[in-house]
Image 1 (cartoon, rainbow over the protein chains, first blue to last red):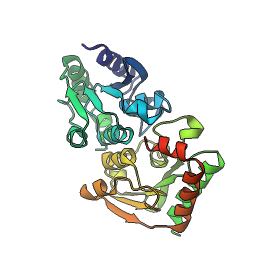
Image 2: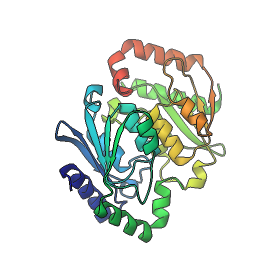
Image 3: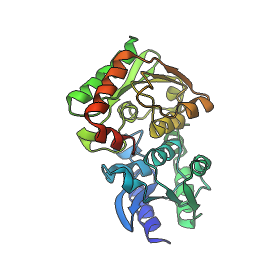
Image 4: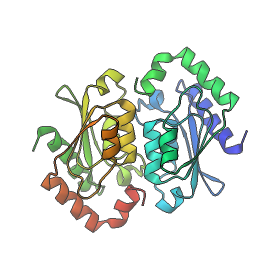
Length: 145
Length: 145
C-alpha cells in the first residue's frame, strides 16, 4: 500500500482503538504530511470532524497556494461535507481508499475538476465492513441518516 | 430583523470582538436554537470552523430526523464546505443574511432541493464590507484564495 494511504489507514485504526469511527485521512504537500486526522464523532462528540476535516484542521491555517498543490488521502469516499471542504480549498487531487461501503460525492469532485483516484484497498474495505456490521446506528448517524 | 438572524449576527459580532472573522450562524429546530457559533479561524487557528460549521459542532451529535426538520441561519452565503455540511445532514432550509460580499454555493443547495432564502440584510452587508476592507488577506485565506 502507498505510504500516505498507510498513514491514513493508521489514523482510521487509531480511531477504532479509541472507540471511534474508523476513517482516517492525511493532507500531503510535496511529499510531506501537513496534517493527519481521523473521525472524532465519538471521541469529541463532534458533528463536523470527519477524518478529512480533522486532517485539514490539524494541518492548521495554510495559504491557498499550499492547498492548490496538495493531495488529500482518505480511507473512505468523501461525503458531501468533506467534498465541500476539498472544493473550498481547491485541493486538486484526492486519493480514496475505497468506495464500496460508501460512495460519497466523487462525481461532484470530478465535475469540478478534481482528480480522483480510488484504490479499492482490501484493508480499507474490510475495516469499514466490520465497523458497519458492528455499529450500524453510529455509522448512519455519521452520514446523516 | 428576524430573531434567529439577530442571534447569528450577534455571533458574527462576538467573533469580530475576539479579533476574528465576523460570520455567525445558528441551527434551529422547531423554534429552538440547538447550536450557535461563529468563525474560529483566528481564535482557534481552525481551517474548518466556519460560522456554520461551528454552529453545527456546538449543536452536538443529533439524529438525522432532527437535521431534516431544522433551519440553518447564517449571516453570509455558505461556502462549498458549509454547503456540503448542509447537504450531508439533509438540512432542508437555509436563511442567509446576505450574498452581496460573497456568493457561496446557493445554486448547488437549490439544485439539491434545499430551500434558500436571502435577506440582503444591511447590517450583515455592512459588517462584512468593513471587515473585507480592513483585513483582505485574512478574508481571502478563509475562502481558500
